[in-house]
Image (cartoon, rainbow, N blue to C red):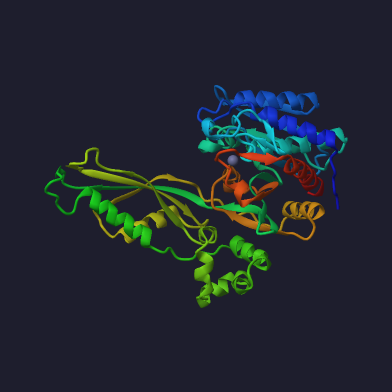
Length: 440
Ligand SMILES: [Zn+2]
């Protein structure tokens, strides 16, 4: 088993690379990832690693670098996105694109999501190259644009133009990672994600003066429809990834919960009362149910005018295997009013979960065991969405795993204020990443 240790100089260099990368503002929209791609290209070329940039649109770059192996095994893709979400600078402790260090943390938009991980992948490649290690396989470092607004100009564009990227052993990408909670630590490797289905609900009615209200109106009909959705409890849907996740993390739960975690399907079938308590945790609920979050409401403009129309938007996340059409139909049934229009404004494609009994998953398990012995490593369903969905939809195995150990508070910094990553995590992450690649 490999247990790579990097030296202080390599860690310092890793931190410097991250700081400079953070300083390139790739807020999306508009993205402007070309500047970031040029920066990464400069680093890779200095190391003698083959590298090319392809623009999907002006200033929207994607970068692909290959560290050549012997060619006796299929490549692994180290996927990362260069764009970041906007940052409200006035609320930050330090400017969000300064890359400043405070108390052992590098601050900046993208330090966790996901320039930090991009740097882990980059530095792992550089480490192997400098050590003169030639693996059985090529390693493809793939830095893409546009993840934060859907990936059409990034991961999707690259797959459309480079079908050879589908002929690989697997992809390592953002998603899961090490979780620190209540003095415990475990590692989640996301092998599946929920399917996005964005819905618009529209109602109509007679308009008029608000001094003589009439029932029903567009607004009251909408409120009723939304209330029915809000009150509805969607049925429990268990996929193998989630059952395995609960089984593996069972020992970390309080004693009363453990039997249900060990055999979730049995507990659901029996209707164990403890499930009510478990499913009251929003995360545990989201992993086992389709969800519908009401996020946007639009109706009248003026307080004394009854509007003739009202709309709501609902962000739905479906358990893989649920057909969006069936889900939409069930929403209409829940609303139970033919005058209410329910339509999807965006339907994500379903992507079959990646299996976890594979050499690459075991390589991750071994690398974690080497650096943090005795911890639980588990497959996981991520409630959000990453670029991995494009690869999974084409049948490629994707392991969404950032080798950082983050507390719940640190995780909340993603897309938030004062996003930051500890220097300790950067060192840990590079070492684990190198060993994943050596073990695979
Ligand atoms: Zn991200």
